[in-house]
Image (cartoon, rainbow, N blue to C red; front, side, top):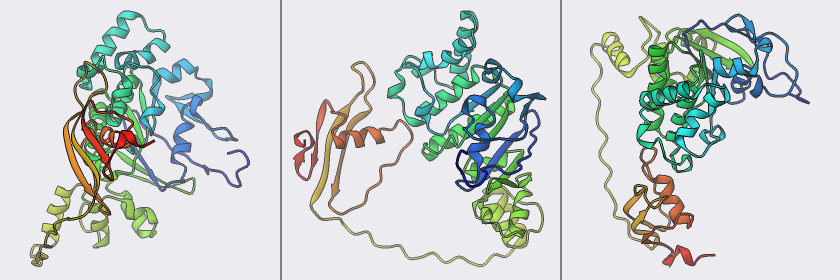
Length: 355
């Protein structure tokens, strides 16, 4: 990078075969995103670069922007950074319009992707009213409508809840298996992705320090006492931490089977006594009573009779899948979304009376 004291990437050499599913791992600042952005000219960061990048044997610098857009898809970390239109159907067609596809082709591909990704039910919805998980799925569908040969993803699930993230990663596995698309992804949820990846690449300090199959890559990290070993899936850590005899498990099921073979007579586990539940009794800091809210007049209700009381000094968590109404509830508490029915009180005072 300009004015940087040291290179962000140091002698990185990597070859990916057609149809491979490769996961790129590393700590924050290890150079993962910088490397991925160099694989698409329009996203490449400013600075000085040496070396060569080739797509299907053709130098990236020799490829036109149109060829890059058609052959290399890129899904960013934040879903909102990539959406450019107002409607779901238009977002699906935007990339095809940019490639100059005829209307018949666009209609066919948009319909195909809407069905493939299961988003036909919100085909005509406003993009602004989609949840984070829905937006990221829309980004992926929009890219795949252009039928790229290579799909690059930069921590695509970092803004998603566990349910949406799991669904998204399962969709990627389906794309790789059914469409044969080459996938290169950076992801912190290695527990969910390692069982399906063909290869794992670990970066540290701008260098590739390990490049092997998911079952074998933990061995080198363990032997070198590298910090990245702690980021490996739990079965991998348990396997190498106990001597590494047999085949390394990648899933919990494989791990349990391996443990039963290694330890046929496991020690008995004593359950901890249950902690008594205490009844909360204090001043009400926040009160939501029978909240009903929808983003548009004819759209479905996002909040349907939501009620909750939060006592002063307590800690509460709102959990649920993308689109369940978590963000909308918080917006209602802050007065950003005004419910058409129900009351929100903060410290006993209606939220709309706060300036």
